[in-house]
Image (cartoon, rainbow, N blue to C red):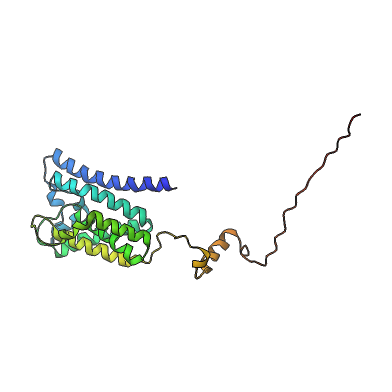
Length: 235
């Protein structure tokens, strides 16, 4: 089961990155400029960029810089938050793109960096909001690997869509708050740590029967039958 989950994690992550590279490869082969597939704020034709912009990049350096973070962040969200992965990915994608269309400056906004900031923010805040050692470790890993992303939300360089970074971070934070109470895995608890066993008992009753846990239930000991065979000794 673990190996299957890990395989699914890397399959989905690799597929998304491959689509990013495929979009750039087609653009190069056609000697075309796919910039028009980016998000162009407050224009009807710019709405298509909400879906297509993560697969459009300005140059090879732009694509390379987005590929590894995209791969790692998708894998981490899928592995640690699988029950809400598709919702986070889908809603975060649409919300970030729509907000860029509403609030960003009038220019074509391309690249997957908005999604990167969304996923990084979701992972960072989810760990602290859940107060789980396991997920807090993920949050600290995000700080260690991608802490420098914080500088991307400031308008230091007009060539960079800092609006996508900022709005992606905000949408990821909102999704972390919204899904903070969704159970993504069951932590092992010992008997002295359990405050309310009713849910566990109800679950086990469904699996093994209503009275499996009753201490007064009489269980007949198994009866063992032993057959003895006697053979007469020859003189």
